Image (cartoon, rainbow, N blue to C red):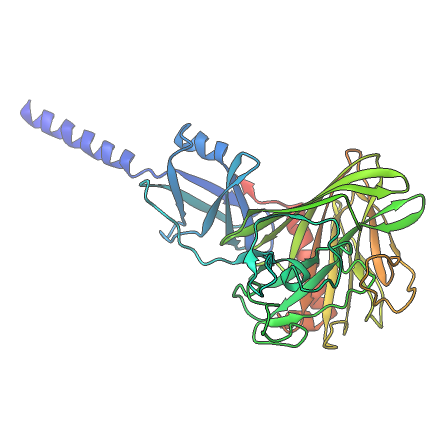
Length: 416
């Protein structure tokens, strides 16, 4: 009898040990027949709660199947908590991510691969503070001196590429070509630093914007007229998150007066680690109109606009050529929702395309008209500079990247 008790107790101990070894996890499946590098993964707090129980205060981190830490960030977006990760997948690969519970003092310390920068010299003393929330003065003009905003506005970057918005009534978008995976834009465009129009150790400003829509700036088609997002009654900026995996900012414009009607427009821009572009989610308040974005063509000499339909849900328009400021290869592309895309067109090449006052008509631009029933549209803008990646030294290399990204969007990672 005693032997039986000992045997039963041993079985019970083994059973408990096995139960203790079960670590909560989530399994992700790549449904595609191609690899996916730096794939964006978002896990909602509700998904975590469904696995761990309803305990929003528990501190967690993530490990792969080999026990390696997975870089992540915990984001609170509009009172909605979610975790963002960036994971590599082989073709058709299934990966298990383990959820580990940490003590309350745990702090993640991952390398930052995204960054948002609005430097403001509020005291005109040459010192630019890093601003995360800002309301722009309605009287702020292009070219004003002393320079209020570092590099003329808001910059965002990851380990591959950077962008900036001229934060005045031009509201144009430009490109920072990068040759480093380090975050550099906190120090670019400061007084007594090298010009960002010359190639430095990190890269350079590679785009001529002029009167165009540059790298995905916004406009509207109204009464058959193409009208840039210009002066507004209020323009505000806010950083929602930035960290090792992704960065998100909002640009909120109120009182955009177009042909006697007032519109409000909000653009939410997100950039993820490992991507050569950013995503823009646009919400227009007012009557239903065609929202526009575009690609500059000032230096484009050959081929013109390329159109690719990689799948049923996304369209690609892009340009490629020796169109950087350094006369080397640069690809510029848009991935657009097929259900939102109305038409793509070319703006007239009026004038030299070099004005910086924000008042001139849009020119030197290939543009896409988008429209939806709820006045909400989204697009992805990509930039491939050959000095960033030799794949972009050829048109085919750039096109392949765009097709790959569009096919990823069409076949999202599955949570099993």
